[in-house]
Each structure stands twice: as C-alpha cells, then as structure tokens.
Length: 153
Image 1 (cartoon, one colour):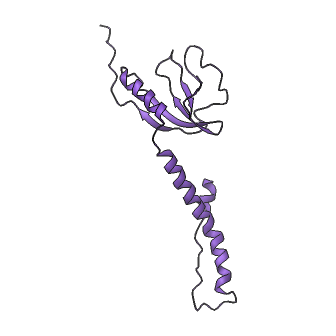
Image 2 (cartoon, helix red, strand yellow):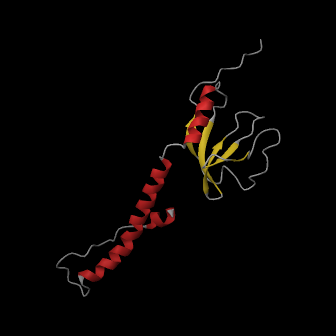
Image 3 (tube, rainbow, N blue to C red):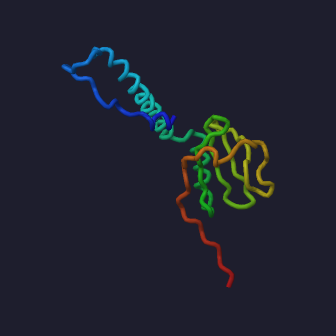
C-alpha cells in the first residue's frame, strides 16, 4: 500500500473554464477522480491505522503493566510492544534476562507462547513468530532506573 500511496500525484493540469479543448469539462471529472480516489483511500487508511495505534492498551495489559511497575526495575528495562502474529495484533514482552523467556500475548490477553529466551530458547509453540518480521511499536517501557549491581572489590 505504501508504494501505491507514494506513486500518487495530483493531475498536472486542471481543466479551467474557457479552455479550448475538444473534451468537455465533465469528461475530465472521471480522470481526476481516478487520480484522487486512491489518494483519499490512502489518507483514510493511514488515519485509521494511526487511530488504531493510538488506542489505549486493553484492561488486561494495563493490569500486567501495573504488576511490572510494582516489581523492582530490571536491566534491561521491561517493555511491552505491539506487533502482529499470523495477521492479528499481538503483544510482545521481551526477556529481561538470559534465563527468562519472552512472552507473546494475543489481543485478548491469552498467552500464545514463549517465542525466545530462557535456557531452552523459547517453547516452540510460535515457530512462525519473528519480532523482525513486523516492526513493533512500543506500548510501554519501564522508565525507572534499575539498581546497579554491587561491584566486586
């Protein structure tokens, strides 16, 4: 769709009253509509996508975020990202350490799988999931600083 929207342009010349041309002004209307209709479509889709991205997190996710905020901060900081899995919205929680797996949730809050991380490298229930396949949007990131670990002297 981005290619379609990028290739759109307005007509170079707009028919004006008094132009000497064999075509009537009415015959120019469909040509203009053919050029602007895809533009209107792209603007509408982009607006809907922006509105969809701007919607607040679902209740189950707000409760999960509240749980994360009640726990001590981690390094790297916890985050929740909106992505897609099998064409549907999904929420990805990256691992915070080597032995803690990442989590992938459906839009309704059902845990789909542990796609990566942990000692086993995930549970294998979402073999088609790749965080790189659909660039995620950050829904929430813990902004608190994690306590630094004590240094050995």
